[in-house]
Amino acid sequence: MLITALSLFTYVSWLNLPYYKIERIGYADIAKKPGADRLWPYLQAGVRYCAVGVAPFGMVLTGPTMSEYYIIDRSQENLCPENTVHIGSRNTKTPFDQMMGEAVDLIYGEGDYTQAIELLNRVLQIAPRHYGALWQRAVALTRSGQTEEAIEAWETVVYEARVNGYSDLAEAYHRLTRLKKPE
Image (cartoon, rainbow, N blue to C red; front, top):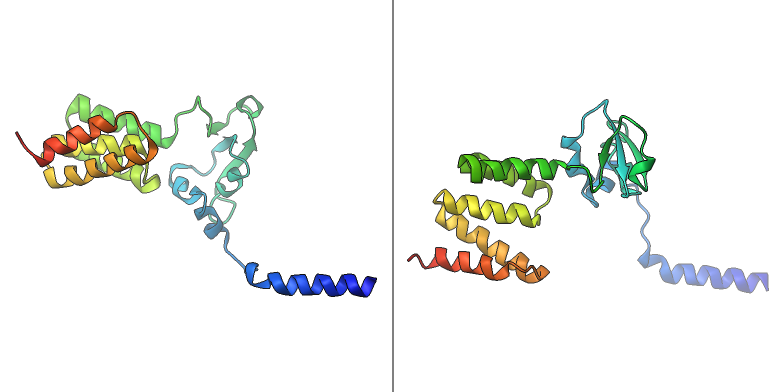
């Protein structure tokens, strides 16, 4: 009986061998999959962070060698230690929110489209499908008179709105067609 069981185990293992690959992989490579490496530039060494509701993602936020940043993983914000900066909390502004806020102020308040586009490009480097950044970048490009770039930007916004079922698809499409056919 034991010989039969071992034989079957060996046979099944041999059949499944092509489906399993064991190889050494670097920690920085692991962090790229969930996008943790894109957040590292916004974290500061010496600051204690509490990653809320993102387990096990918090572990890969610790940096390329797992020692650059101090991250504590918690399931709820009220479980975070005092004097920590919260990441992933709904009540906390992320670096995206801060850059988006600055960009919106630059577009609608100061009319500094060049600086706004630079900020939005940084957001899109980190989160390429960030819908708010795509939309505001298209607005800034349109207002700055960069028509060809604005058309491409609005085409991306229309695509994302269509794929994700966003309610402002018609508005994005209208803005795109206005640029393509100037009145």
